Length: 148
Image 1 (cartoon, rainbow, N blue to C red):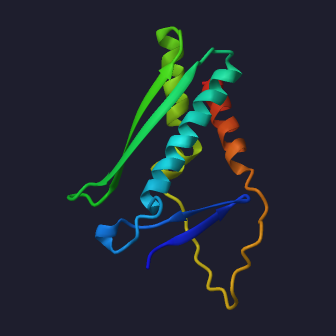
Image 2: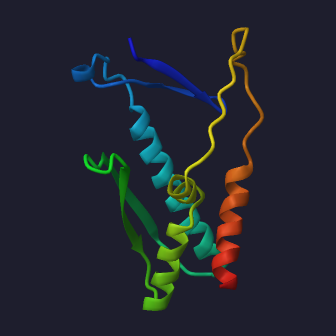
């Protein structure tokens, strides 16, 4: 009932809800995908910043957990970051600051405007133009961190 085929940039996969919620558990759920976006963006931004600063980073690993605070009804994403690198304390602080500036982290933290448009016809599922805004936003975050 809830299974959805997600298509992006020539790749497709299934998103679904757990069996306990009436789904078939055939893929990650929407909040899993949102958590994955935050984790992927964090790793990419840390690696990009390290490259810009010529900091040798062997491995970056991120784990995201998501829950909704029952009192405030706000979503809380907890991000655990492991960076395998022989760096100074100051360099590690810079790498962690880069993680906090990743574009998805900023979007989730600030919120976003969502505009829904009712389409009168079926939406074409062909390949759409690649969204290049993420790399630009990561570059901007790294530049801001570098300039203070």
